[in-house]
Every structure is written in structure tokens, then in C-alpha cells.
Image 1: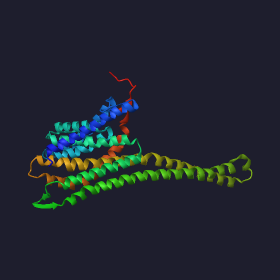
Image 2 (image 1 turned 45 degrees about the vertical axis):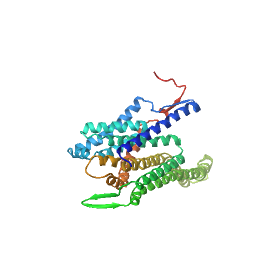
Image 3 (image 1 turned 120 degrees about the horizontal axis):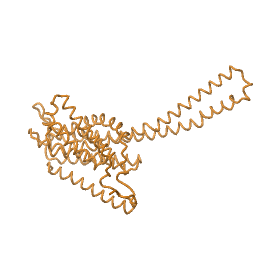
Length: 380
């Protein structure tokens, strides 16, 4: 039987297991590659500034919401701190995605504490841990990206395996949950069979997997399109351009044609020159812009597929029920399951454009901050 204490225990055991894996990697990198592997990323001024920026943005959002509503949102957040953490989690997720799980834990903890202090909110140990969980689980995606070593197929397969494991684990958890899933609203009780909750949770995850594979195929199609454009450039348009250059522009051929004919031929040559320029611009746009945006989309989709079921459906209901109000854990599980799809859509609509803008600005090289040569001098 799960309760709030067991949820905390399993979460901290998960963090402990992850740290043990990092210790193993530390030993492996030193023995195999003669490199240092840092469990806690190296601290530098740029990393501190970037981390502080993400924390301040997250706290500012809660503070602005409270101020614009003349304190009403502050009262609401004190009554239902779970929703405050849900909003905090948007920027915490971005921080974990940028800086990895260890720094993500720090971002989650600092964001929750600062928000409580600046908005006179209520501290609750469970929601404090949920903020940490947002940073930790979103940071695991950064570890997956690091392991895949920029191999898109490895990343897509790894993402699929992770989402499938999460879906199976959450489904088994709901199947063996001892209480009935009843939602009480407006004096009426609606009973949800367990399969209905499976649909509410699994359908968004299936859609996320399908979109991740679709985006990966779009990258491959873009590469194929790029190849065809290059073939067209080198074997079609460039040949015609060279033909007009050889045939009509050489001085020895000028006397064979009238001025009108020469003007027409020069215009034709200019036309193909413009076509060449457009093809080069199109090739550049195919290579640079879409691939980066598609990669960001897949990362955000995996992020939401990881944090929403685990943190919102499994962890938060126990802390929601502990606040009182007479609603059991089963009610909150049902309520959170109903909100999975809307929250995933809202979070994606907010996180993707913000992440798309912040990521190029924050030039944080995660790999270089956890791995370095053993010959590099250690600063005192």
C-alpha cells in the first residue's frame, strides 16, 4: 500500500540509484578513457548566472500572477499549493532540460523556496519534493541526449523505451490501487473504471511517441530533400548556366548575334543565376533551422511524457489528500489523470517556444562540465 511516506522513500531511492550509476560511470571513465567524470557538474560563473536566470524567471511568473490578481492567486496557491508547483514546474522543467538532473534538483528546490518566501505561500514537504522531482526527471533527458551522442535514431529509440516503461509502470500502479476511482463534483459521484484512466494517461503518451518518430522521419526526409536539391543544383541548373556562359558570353561569339538576341540571352543567363541563388538559400534553410526545432520538440515531448505521469499522477495526489478537505487519494488520482492531456498541451505551448529561445542564448555545454581529461590540472 502506497502512502506519502512510501512515495518519498521510492523517490529518494531513485535518486540514490542514479547517483550510484554515476559513481560507476566515474570509475569506468577513469579506467577506460583516463578521464574525470564529475557526479556534480563543475561550477563556473556562466553556469551560476544561467541557473539563476532560470530560477528568477520561474519565481517571477508566480509573483506576477499573484500581483495581477490582487493577491487572489496567492490565496489560491496557499489553499492548493499543488497548482503553484504545477506552474513552477514549467520553468523547472526547462532548467532540468538545460542543465541536467543534479542542477535540476537544485533549481526545483530553490524555485519552490523562493516562491514561498516572496508570495507568503505555505510550505509543504511533499510539494517541495515534487518541485525537486520536476527538475530531476527533466534533467534525465539531458543525460539521455549525452548518452546518445547526437545520434538521432538512438535518442528516438531510447525515448520510446522510456515512455513505454513509464506507461506500463503507471498502468500497473493504477491496476493494483486498492480504492475505486471516484470523482465527486456538484453533489454527484462519477466512478471511473481503471481502463478509463489507462486511456486518459496512455493516449497522450502514445501520441507523444508517434510525434517523436514523425519528427525523426521529417529530419530524414529533409536530408533526402537536401540530396535531391544538390543533385538538381550540380547536374541540372549549373549545366544550363555553364552552357549560356560558354555559348553566348564569350567575346568571339558576340559578332554572330544581334544586339536584341544578345540582350535576350543575357536575361536568360540572369534568370538561371537567380534560380541558383534561390536553391542555395533553400538548401541552407533545410539544413539549419528545421532540424534544431525538431530536436527541441522531441525533447519537450519526452519531458512531458516523463514528468506528467510520474509527478502529477503518482506523486502529487498523496500530498493533495494530506492537506485535508475530505477528498481521498483516489479522487486526486482521477482528477490528475483527467488533467494529463490538457496540462501536456498547455506545457508544450509554453515550454517549447521558451526553450527554443533560451537554448541558443544559454551556451551551456553539459558534457564538457562533467567530463574532462585526467591530465587537466585540478584548480585549488
